[in-house]
Length: 322
Image 1: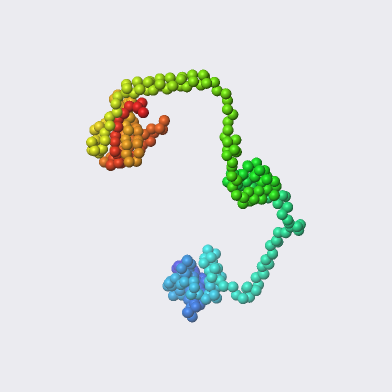
Image 2: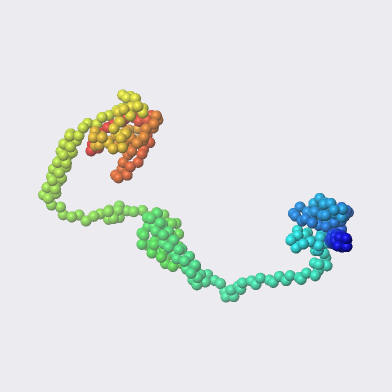
């Protein structure tokens, strides 16, 4: 029995101690609307504070902007370290606190030293940038003198030579551009284009002319013989034939192959249209309205798009025919 009484007394003392701690931590905090909240702040977040009231109930979360400065300072003094960041930005400085702050002294930024020596136009020669600018102006003056000499038909050496004089040369292009264009006499033209006349042997000249005629005749005969051995071109003209996809697929079936057959290996397809003439060895693609002909220029090839409605003539001929 005695031990049971002692146990009950301990439990009573513990409850009284816990209640005293709760009362000690509870406080009264004023709101801006004149009301007060008495209790223990148990939860802080971005939206406000939740209190455990004296009655043991829990209040709704009260926003921070409803508390007075005195209440916020009291809450900050009682708050746990991880809850203080919610309250510290809300503290407004009192006039006496502002006066206690140390005055900040702003040091003036020192200005760069200005040159004390006199600055004149000749100082440009003491700078690499200035020398580069002078060189560019000098070259531009010579180029302007050359253009003026061409435009006004003046002697190149005279205009450019005067422009090459340092400083004063800038006036050379200005003076000559203001002058009228110089007329050239017939004698000067003949002297410029005259070539020294060499003595010519009439007999040797006649023999050379005869030899050139014989070589030309032989070349013409060889070309005619080669042309006569080649097959005649086959020509299809609009009006005689209806040009459409079916016509080209039927008449030029051999030109659609990637590797030409025996009959088409030495033949080319020449198409005349309103866009011009195109010669190729293969039709790479055809639609109802367009034909793509692979043309060639040396080792290079290109696919030319030719509208079928614009085709005036299609011709199959040997590649060696002119």
